Structures are given as structure tokens and as C-alpha cells.
Image 1 (cartoon, one colour):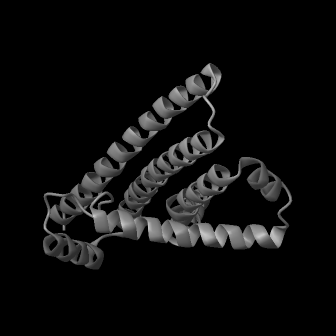
Image 2 (cartoon, helix red, strand yellow; image 1 turned 180 degrees about the horizontal axis):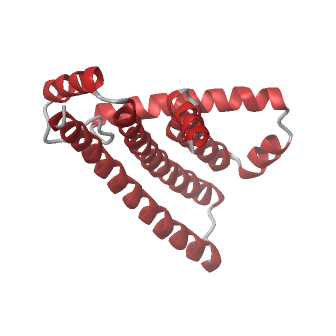
Image 3 (cartoon, helix red, strand yellow; image 1 turned 30 degrees about the horizontal axis):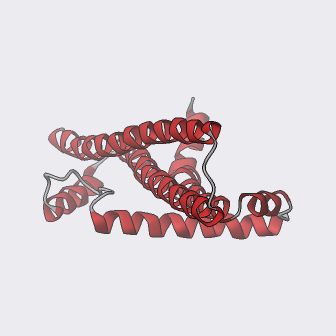
Length: 193
């Protein structure tokens, strides 16, 4: 059990899981959406032929895009660093006190809640922007070709929009719930110290 816990702590605290699910995956989703929206066949061919070194560059770019996505979301109020009803100075002060007196276990739980909050927040924003980008590019292509969409294409688009809309809604709610849980965790932990 101790080794599993140590491994989990390394994954959470030293880049791997938090950055993978909170930055790289959302950034990669947005990057894929842009590439496939512009030219699906070229994007698929390019991804199939990428050498290992280029995958490292692509994943690094995805991490950077994930950082930018989070900054954009926070600047618009779509991604929360704290519950909306809590003033920024209050949250920062409580967090600083928490980190001075919290146990390693309490800090681990705080970071786990933060990882989920970050992954869901960046994920829902990446998926939202991807859907918008796909829709705009599909509409432009249809107008340029002066063609009507087939019934099968319309049905696929509707089903995809419903599934994506549901995923976006649930991820957004999960993000907000974990923003609240993370702050409540600080408050509960401070009561016992």
C-alpha cells in the first residue's frame, strides 16, 4: 500500500497526471480539432506518419496550448480557481494558511481535487471550442462546395453535438463542483488545526 501511495504522490505532485490530464490532453484535443477541421485527410495522414521526435514536439505544444486555454478560461470566468462566492484575497489567505499547517495527507487530497478541477475545466473548454471550430469549418466547406448535407451526415452531426454537449455540461459541472470541494477541504482541514 505504501509503495502504491508513494507512486501516486509522484504522479500527482511531479507533473505526470496533473499536466497530462489538465494540460496536454485538453491542448491536444483542441489541436486535433483544428487540424481535422481544416483538412481531415491531411491531418490523419500527418498523424500516422509522425516520427517519435515530432510527437514530443506535438505533446509539448499541446501542453503550451493547455496552459493558454486555462489562462483564457480564467480570464473569461469560465474556469474557476476558487468558488465564485469566495473573494480572491480570502481564498489566497486561507490557502496560504492551509499549506503552512496541513499534513501531507491533507495536501495530497487538496492536490487530487485540484487535478480533477483543472482537468475538467480545461477539458470542457477545449471540447467546447473544438465543437465550435468543427461546426464553423463544416459550414464553410458546405457553403464553398455549394452542396447539401446528406441525411446520414446531418444525423451524425446531431448525435455528435448531443454527446459533446452532454460531455461539456457534465465536465463543466464537475469542474465547478471540485472548485467548491477543494475550497471546502481547506476550510474543513483548518478547523482541525
